[in-house]
Amino acid sequence: MTERDPDNPLQQAERDFVALGIAVAAVILLLGTGGSVLPQTLDALLGHGGRPDVVLANALTLNIALIIFGWRRYRELTREIEERRRAEARAHILASTDPLTHCLNRRAMFEATEEIRSRAAIRGEAVAYCMIDLDNFKQINDMHGHVVGDAVLVMLCERIRALLPREARLARLGGDEFAFVLPFPAGHPERVDDLAIRLFETFGQPLQMPEVTIDITLSIGIAADHEPDGTIGLVVDPASLMHRADMALYQAKKQGRNRYFWFEPSMETELRFRHQLETGIRRGLSRGEFIPFYEQQIDVETGALVGFEMLARWRSPQFGLISPDIFVPVAEEIGLISELSEKLMEKAFADAREWDDSLTLSINISPVQLRDPWFAQRLLKMLVAANFPPRRLEIEITESCLHENIGLVRSMITSLRNQGVQIALDDFGTGYSSLEQLRNLPFDRIKIDRSFVAELREPSTRTRLVDAIVTLGRGLDLPLTAEGVEDEDILEALKRMGRLKAQGYLYGQPEDAEAVRARLKVAGRLAGVRAAPETPGLAAVNDQTLRQRGAHP
Image (cartoon, rainbow, N blue to C red; front, side, top):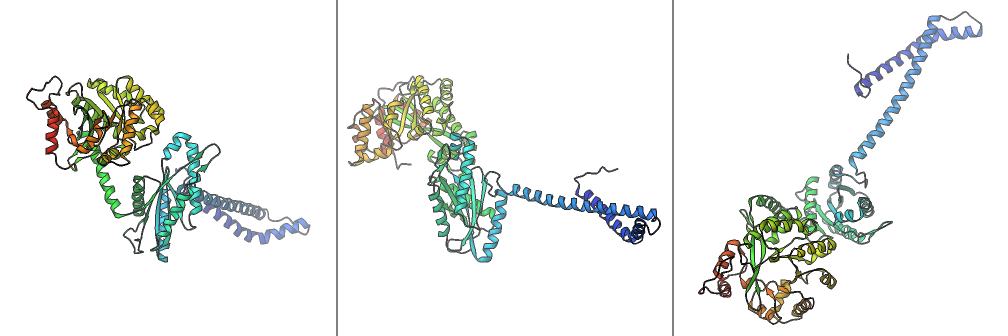
């Protein structure tokens, strides 16, 4: 025997059909028996006749009871239907909207986009799909908590809704990413431009909350299903519109955030290349394709080699030799910069152990690494494992790192200096360092950015900046290194400024470990090796290198 399920719609329908049949039969019986039983019953009650037929009277009573039962069941069915409709409506709302902001969700946005496109096509209009991302929203959550972060998202949606036209649809795609879709007259993309500009103006005003004031900026990517001149484009489905708007959003964030971009076909090519880079970086890390190159650092006064700066290079089988300007930002964004940098440092420590003990090794540290509170400990552990003296290592920190977490940076610098590691402030003059930070943070050296050094070719007001930096370094008792020394004019100008270290293509291009080892062997600067009397000095080797050097890479 099959067990009955009270929630089974089919079994419930069977019960409802039986109840309906009983009620109909009861009505028919009432009509059949009521005509004879009711007059007899009335006569009996009035004393004009005998008793009514008992069987028919019982049948009439049963019919009335069945009719009452059927009426109650009808009312219950009506109530159940209403409740089911309300439940389905609630389920539809929950399935299509974001519970926090009450915007559409990603799934419902596809349907809304297709619906708007269908109506726009009938009217001859174009459709714009705009993706919005809050810049640095994670910092808001980290600093003020997720309750404030959620309040920011709700206020964001309220401000956007206030600007959108009635036929537009707004959705939260996930996290701090939103999108809206709207029709606009074909051939008039400036209507969408005006809306984007008003969005930036609106969010130029801080978000006022009971306990805190939040400043936020937006990045926006826009794609349309028509060309700017109004002709119909190749994009015909919501998924393609969303994908292209996402590519435009990526371009806006890449160009510095707090701006908007329309999709252009070149973005697709660039994004495809980026994907190839990401895949290549992951594969290259496991295959050891990232190697250290070394740039010479020279004492300007004596011309003696005093050390090398490690520069990362990627020997990719697909792309060839790639400079760090291309792959380092990508590695930072995909979370692989720490692993990549540490592998390069391990190789550099092993290479530098073969050099003369007087030669130093300088290494740039990514801002991402300085956010890791355990970075200093891991670096010291690598030095111990490589048996490399900390006094020969110089860590270079850019000015931008000082503003993200000054307390953590100070702790790391102090920890490393206590073990003998030297700390240099890199690219000085291009960031936001204050004299207070230079005075309070325990730096050992200042590096003058190449953009200032290049101005030394011709006397100008900018050369006075280099003079000022040199004077500042002397006042703080901090030695200096000049980057980007590429010709004799720059070198002569630096010599007049006092004792400095310099590096640049004037002294030769960056070289891999084998080329550096060969150079040092000739100069007698390998560990435990002395130069033969007839061997030319390193300065002569540098001169020869300079004469043979071609164009800069």
